[in-house]
Image (cartoon, rainbow, N blue to C red; front, side, top):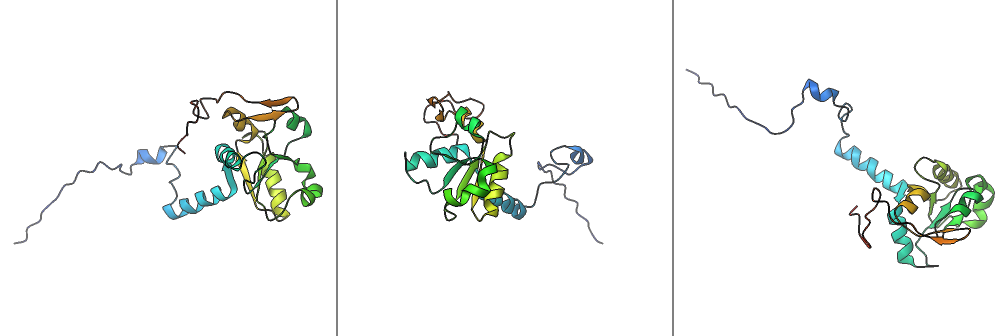
Length: 178
């Protein structure tokens, strides 16, 4: 006579159910770990965030070499309204005729424009890459530079605002932990 044993296990792991397929987050399943690693690695190759750019510029010091050129791609009126200290002003429309005399193709470039709602830095990064430059785009642009409380310059002089608590820690010398 043959005996059959039935074992019942209880798992706390989420089970795939019909309800999970309608979850807006998981409607499209997450990528496999290797695919995710390739994607996020590529993203970091193309982007830098405001805090990392500020840290690199601060470490280099005034007039120092952070290892890249920061390029403001906006108009002269926008530049005068406010720009990052040490940035090179090179509007996107002037890149084809001016980049060759202003930028060394051996030095990486970081582009920025107004903010997340503006793709001017992306267009500038494309134009520069087509000319043979290695380029990253600064996420958040000038808007997030100001919102995170970093100093900026205007046609009238230097300015700084308090950090926006929705974008950066407000305590002096606080680290966001990213």
